[in-house]
Length: 389
Ligand SMILES: Cc1cc2nc3c(=O)[nH]c(=O)nc-3n(C[C@H](O)[C@H](O)[C@H](O)COP(=O)(O)OP(=O)(O)OC[C@H]3O[C@@H](n4cnc5c(N)ncnc54)[C@H](O)[C@@H]3O)c2cc1C
Image (cartoon, rainbow, N blue to C red; front, side, top):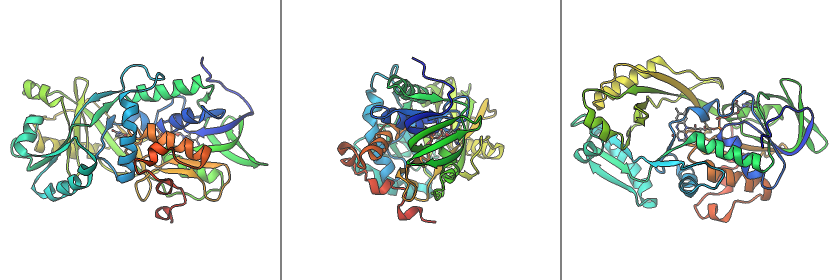
């Protein structure tokens, strides 16, 4: 059943603002217990950051809370529930390569992440070149390989949550940008740009880069979200080295200081300068200078022989000061619940983070299995000291 609709003045238990991966995933979880409306400003869901990711699942990426949320999401990706059509993952080991100056940093990363993983090992430059024959001979001094990394079907995941939300009776409203919120007794009334109004006791702020803007409509203090642009681009398969190119399709490769990465994608390679350039919330555009810088690095480190770029895009990865998501009730504003700050990990954390968010919204507590991963409500709380201005 398609519950997509255009309606005027309607009551829900919960309204979720934002139709990216954050919004659809928590809306799906909440809809098992509450009536839910999901509202998205664009005419297409997942138009912003969610539709622009590199689609990877990297358990060694991010801080301890992010890594725990990622590990806690693995089972969902590997054996998804029946809301999802087909498999969501394919194996794609991550190879992090260090030049001489990056070796100490890579060893430190290995010391941090290896105790929680049986799939990570350090290898020398020769072994790295065998894993990815597209690496230029002699470039790598030390490498870390994570055999547990995965490639994700982001569209399949987003569509799955959306399908599940609709099956649970949820309402989805597109082209419904919220412009105003007002309090009426114990409810919030939200007005969209067309003048339509929706009412709910609880509003979930899942507006990505716009989360502080949305919070301002409720009179809530900002969490200091920092949207950081990241560019990605596609390059064709190099014709000179067909055998190496085929072998290179088995890994994703990233520099230890994260100033470039590349992974197989369709008939070519998806590459990124991995930049973090602060930007106000907006429809992000790729940066030609960053692309040129990445091409220089790629040609220095690999045999990709990049000469041309077929397509490019950019998205905003939105971070809090401690690079941890913000999940929980606003400390000062009744009925406003935060679900923001997904940073560069919003896809890979989505299944566990949505369960954590729904549970905190409904019971004030985390599910026991997520607590077992070391995830705490305090580390996600909007009022935590790390976010103080
Ligand atoms: C180049 C790149 C590579 C990445 N690679 C990975 C990766 O490999 N793995 C990974 O896990 N993550 C990755 N990420 C990060 C991931 O994409 C994000 O963490 C995630 O998509 C954030 O989802 P979101 O729903 O919070 O934000 P968004 O997808 O931006 O959704 C927020 C939505 O809120 C809507 N909105 C805002 N204001 C309003 C309003 N007033 N009314 C109604 N709607 C509103 C917006 O229109 C938007 O659609 C990458 C990101 C980039 C840019």
